[in-house]
Image 1 (spheres, rainbow, N blue to C red):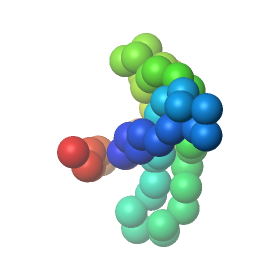
Image 2 (cartoon, one colour):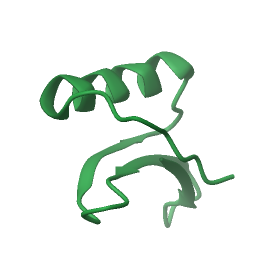
Image 3 (cartoon, rainbow, N blue to C red):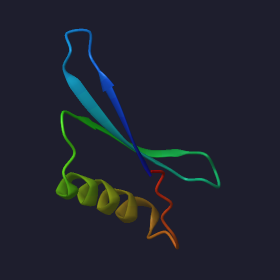
Length: 62
């Protein structure tokens, strides 16, 4: 799980939440928004858990 920040040509900032399966290198979800509060992150994780089951461990890049 990692966050990526970038800016659009007009200067607006966007953030992307990426959740990747480290074993298969499969992208499980991408969520793009102007801001990603904890509720949005929790919803993304819940969606992945519903589809794939709960992981044994989460690795977060800082």
